[in-house]
Image (tube, rainbow, N blue to C red; front, top):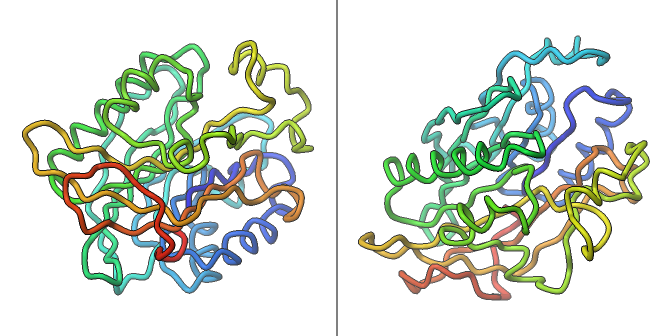
Length: 285
């Protein structure tokens, strides 16, 4: 599962119970959080029977928000069962001019079949026009993964702040990653920024980001599976049993983003690099 929890924006204290309940209700094995802080990550982990296996946060001082509970820290966290997970490390990403500490955070998680999947949480530059910055961030993530996890399946999840028709998607995602939502539900736009969300006072920017002819809402949040690279032994594919959005009206809209979760497991055929539907999946990862 991946979810941008919207830090301490809006009525954040009132939002927390719904957010924790929505995540715990999915019985997740691995949770990738963005815009989180230490206390929130621990609360979510405890509710799910998990632990904070990795967390990377940095200073964050926006105006007009009550961030006292977060101690003005914000970042990424990976939650999992510590008996089945181990921290691999972090990589700093070029952040451009958004002044937020941007990283990739990787945790290896052992499946019930005995193989390991590297789960990576990230949150890319949020400024609409910074396509080149996000491309550099994705390139840096891919370089780092080639060093620390050259073989084996990788799932990259997070708020990438880009749409599927952005130039950086075509240049830095499509050649190297499988978009699990599009692969599994090609006829569903999968908007994670929903105009029905009452936390949005203005939704005109969604039309600007999408461009003409696209469905309402914006898809910023992704679960991606790494494709094998030339000259490297093929990564096992990842079977997708189900993929869905959570955290809408049924949970009181606990964030400005919807959460994204999927049932995944590595396929036994190395080198396939492409997920395929499989009814036998792990719990939500």
